[in-house]
Image (tube, rainbow, N blue to C red):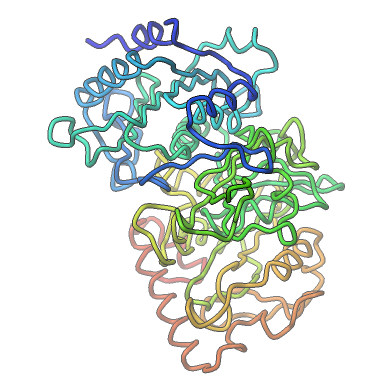
Length: 526
């Protein structure tokens, strides 16, 4: 039987292990090892090779006594045997043991100390360890870091390539989670985001069992302690819209909601940088400095980033500590939300730019999780595709979707939260015909939703989806509020909207007859 903890202990206590290096030391090591270059901003810039996004088909969970009856098995949570995991585990440990150097970071996931996860990240690459140090919560002292006994250990060996014919994987890349052993094994891919999202999946498994709602959302808070949550998949605007100079940032991507309020799961932000500009996203632009990591961003000979260059991928990224945002909330905790925003990038161009949801509609749209999968977020996606991602984060949910939906519904009821659906996607036509919603209009609508101003305005009902659309919003052209008004052909709009509604109905059938009441209450009969 494989002694997983023993082999990990032997690996990290070898002379070639660098434990808890500082940011400066990790940057120095990365440059020395030619893993990356310094950009003119001071950020460390690295490339990830052929894998420039997550690889969901290469992600597995070990089916064992712990996971067998708890995990919602299927295309997202693919089972793999203990034997395959053990075989790869030993190969990866031997692979890393032969390296001249490895890098270890000890820290936490979860700003709530009662439910935080003690973790360790073991990396083949120095810049990957810097990414982990940036994205997870850092201990306050080296002494504290050395006393951490990890509940989960991430082991990342990008240059170890699996052989599917003998190793039982789908490709050379693999991301395998063992809930029983507390190990996440990553190989064959240099995309750093796999580490971040693997730990998020673990928190989505652990927190609900402790009565805490885990959420794929960003969060911020205003002077009046009015907390807002922004749900949405990559590219819908979670990071951009939560980075608001008028509000404190709690976090940009992963949160928990407990009896006291909201807390960030991470210690850093992971922003898409394609077409980033100081004018449109000043907080993020300014945050990319020394201590940050740039992934696949093209830089010129002087080290100046070209955020408009998508030569390597559309999914260019920046990871930076949350305190690089001037108005970040430290520690990253706040009270109960007053407003929830569901973000969707509708490639069909038929959903309103903002609409008010009833609690029943909120449950329906949360379970549906409609958006467009944007180019570069996953391998093989080169243009936007409509997709339904349960709870706006199905790739990261080990438990059944209704676990999260029911918790959210109860919390909305308990705290009287206002919920809005916001389309940051296309307007005036579908993708290729219409244009992307103007960011300044979206910001204006969201600010007025959070302040409560929208509730003072009259609403009109959309005839296709049953959504409540505000008759007017200060600072936003009235004609764009109802998307049907700005299509060249109302008949073409009606046809496209009807087709999307049918897609909603068809998608919701996967939840079974027990969800019929949610569909009916949400305005979509199965």
